[in-house]
Amino acid sequence: MTVKPIKCGLLPGESRAVVEGLNEPLRLCLERGLGRPVELVVGHNYVATGEALRRGELDLAYLGPVTYILQSRDADLEPFARPTHGGRIGPTFQAAIIVPADSPVESLDQLRGGEIAMGDLVSTSGTWVPRLMLLEAGLTQDRDYVRRSLGAHDAVAAAVSERQVAAGGLSLPIFRRLLAEGRVDGERVRVLAESQPIPEYMWTFREGLPEGLRETLREIFLDLRDPAALRAYRADAFIPAVDADVDRMRNWMERILQARIRPAGPATQEGASSRRLGGVSS
Image 1 (cartoon, helix red, strand yellow):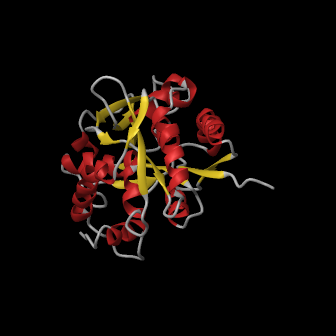
Image 2 (cartoon, helix red, strand yellow):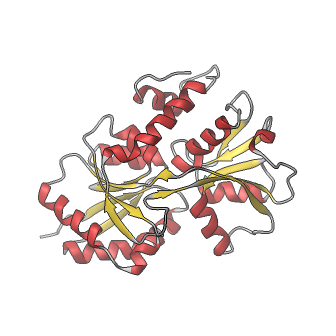
């Protein structure tokens, strides 16, 4: 009898091959702990991964705060584990806005009138937090700058490095890894600003996953000490996660949506985000 694999959903923050490679050590740990096959599933975009979990096509998924917030409104999803990091960082990470190394821009407000690359439309550190950073500098999307959505953090870094845009917003940990791996030339790009701490991503169960399986998975994650598996998350360990851990992000999203000037035209994915947040409009 064929044993049905456990399906783990992952967001396409980078290419599918990179995401799968980074998470292969974790997949092997899960297989050993569960005694059954585990399959990694990388969605073609962030919404696809979140909706697959909401529809029950995945058993668990690693969701950023924004993706989790949007999908949990329509399903009884349960966050259960999040990575924590050494020192005072804890279970948080940061976004950054980067510019070409020779750009004359020295502050966020000087990006007024420019085109700014960002990642997936529902990426926490690739779109939403960079927009918050710009908003706090007095810049509103569509009025003060044009957003170019490139889908992935590495694509944003490449666009800035090649001077295709005035600036780009992305995950600071991913940007640092791209520099360390030589995938981005540190002589061609620099960090203009770093965000305040952002609540970490959360491993999340689908609605209806059997309780016994939940408990086994929870134990595997919270007891995980495999260096290779943790390295992909820059983590010392995984700690428990609950819905309230992303309340700060909920507040930030409402601020951004309230400030947004909605352009004329057909409904956008962001419009759907606004409706799912309870009809917050701008």
